Length: 300
Image 1: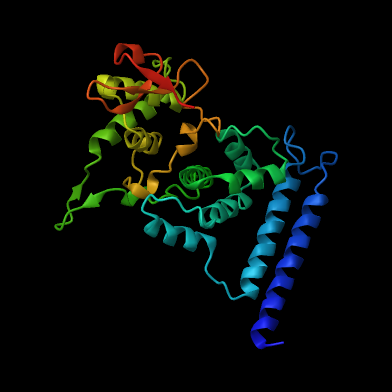
Image 2: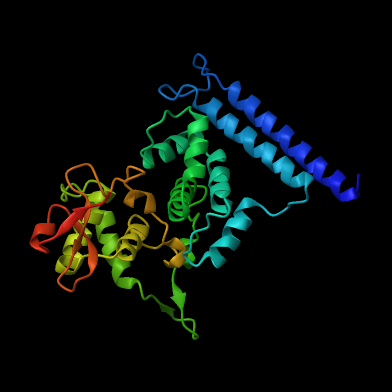
């Protein structure tokens, strides 16, 4: 047997052992009676998180064994610079990074992520969560990564500026601050304040704000995907780092009917696609689309 054949055999054996460990970890993840550390209503969820953590540990050990020192975060960041908005079905770099983010979450953060994505499976179903992570397509995965980062990076008294908001704006060559997104930031700030105000009773959720923005800001022209995503990105974080093409996946799950996206279905209002007077397909709020176009379709 040659040296290359011996190395290949060693790698295959290592992978087989890793898969066995994962299978054993999943098979032993049987919900039990609530443990003292469980939160009422979330019994067994910590077990599920432990399984995800075990999987991460196993894969990390395999990477270390094979001298793969680059972290999933590094690969994720590097990949974003080369994707240029294209699909990356050939690998799971972003999915792996999302898996890392979820395994680092506290129980409360995990519950927030589960709720934010309107997932139908139970909190303690680790297998379903893993399937969810690796079934996400490119933009869906980037949107989920953004949600996870936002949940983990919520400002706290110990870390009031987790996203580096203090460096959110661009500067010119003289060091003077410039901001081409000033108008949309101001609009996002208005809606952010409206969410916490009792005076705006029709704006109770981010979805309400997005639909209201689409109707009042774009009217008969309708809004593009990028217009809505950009506003959603700044909504709640008007001083966030400047929006770029790498943020196009932000909130993308909310546009997917396959993922039960809350922006395109359910509730008192949602987004539909219509043809504006210029012949372009754009997004409109279902409640007002009849005022702007004679043709529209629900997003399927």
